[in-house]
Image (cartoon, rainbow, N blue to C red; front, side):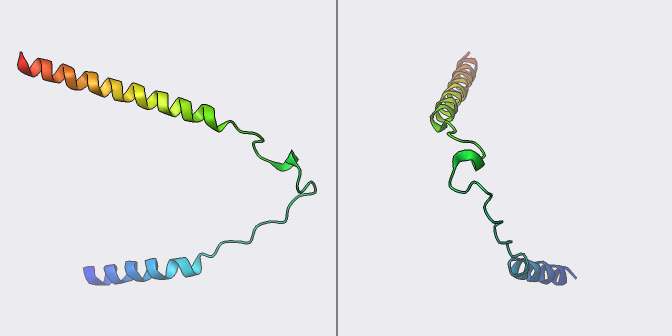
Length: 76
């Protein structure tokens, strides 16, 4: 019985991409080529990167402090 379920799942995973085809994109609006239709014109990428690096540094620092605290308690 378990083999039948495995076969059905495998058949679905093989045929699913053939059945789920993407729709063609919609035609562009009236102001094609202008910046009016941009969802976020001039989005600042650099600021997000600095925020990500800063948060990663804080997280890494917290982990290092936790490890040092655990080693100190283990020695005591």
